[in-house]
Image 1 (cartoon, each protein chain N blue to C red):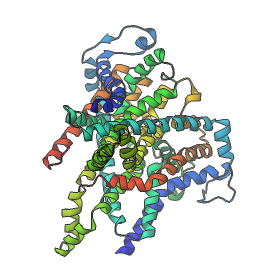
Image 2: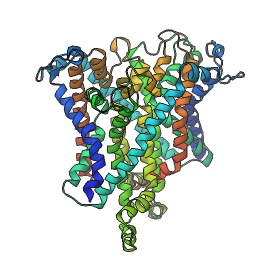
Image 3: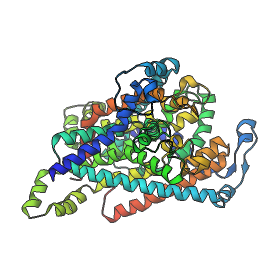
Image 4: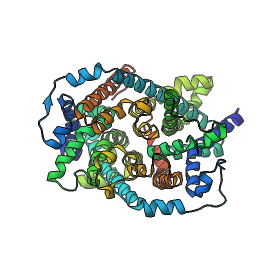
Length: 276
Length: 286
């Protein structure tokens, strides 16, 4: 029984990783091998040509930095803002608290893609008064991605803040710690697993966003982010698959590293939601 | 005290979430097209006529139906695969478990965009590995509507089952060993333990993964847009999200696009409310 289970797990693992493997492999394959009629699951002549093309000719380095700026800004801002809100919603009882919680839950169900139309006009108008967050700027992407990541982050962090015993804060208060110290030196580090888990979600949504990047960044191609820039590689007839796979590999690596980095905290973070 | 803590969140969410939502509803009542956007002409108030146009359009009903079926199939497949593998993870050796977790993590981490293009490459008509292996060289996987949806659906499930699997696995391992021991001392079978102890204890987590899956799969955008090149041949693979986008930004019918957005929002909120009621019935505290 266990042996069958092991076999199934290994087969599923191989099938699951295969597209990623194929992507990385094709990124290193010479163009001739990619276009060959008998594709082999290995290559004997790995080449960096596709990466050179992607980074040099197509300027993917620039798009990479853009994506990183947007995603990291969203993660950092979302962590701080959602932490404060989560504290307010768990540590204090006030009128409208439950209503607010329900609203945050409902906000997660809103198909944010539908908001692309009104946000397009709003960002356009905003850019006329506040340069730096209008159309064609990275600021606009940071703003909307931050807004989209907050409801989930707040909802998720709430559980982590609630799990920290109030006694710790009371003890610190008696020891003369200020509210500020309690918040940032005691509570904030204690919910690190929660921050890691929500951070992953914020990072991924921001890093993967294709629709808003495509909608907001119209003429300033130097401010394009990776997903939308990848479409540049698509030619109707002759797809440069080597280049596309190299660019895709570059786009996947940071998320993968980030994931593996926070994996343990992610798993314990998600497990933290189990009922006691 | 609580107000200043909430202030930053509200300062972001009110202008960038609540207000656009209101604007979406408002736009859906107007004729808002190219003359309004670039010509500065005033928007024409239509009342509910955008919705009338939509509901009398046969195309809209087709898109709506295929969105629902596509989302439902993806949710069921994702949950079935994810839950099965989560349970499997608890019953296998360390090495296979590590392999499966690592592979799933990679699929999860891959951006929707790269996932889409890799799947497209694998299923490419002329250069794709799948056609080569199956000996179906020259077969276009996106030519038939249903095959196209199945392919995109497979890519979506590949992407989303890891979240379900890892979350449920984390939940199962977080159940205190003592509880399981007590159950086995009381003579519970593996099945009874699963049904009476593991599933009830995981209910909050199951709730999270179900609702997340519904939300994600109902509004798949990137995979459809990229893999079927904007909605497939003659729009045969359109789902509501892509349909709304195309109506608004490709044919400059921003009012009509907004109306589709409103329909989509209402459907998702409806599902949420049903779900909240179901949660309350099982005695779940908010």
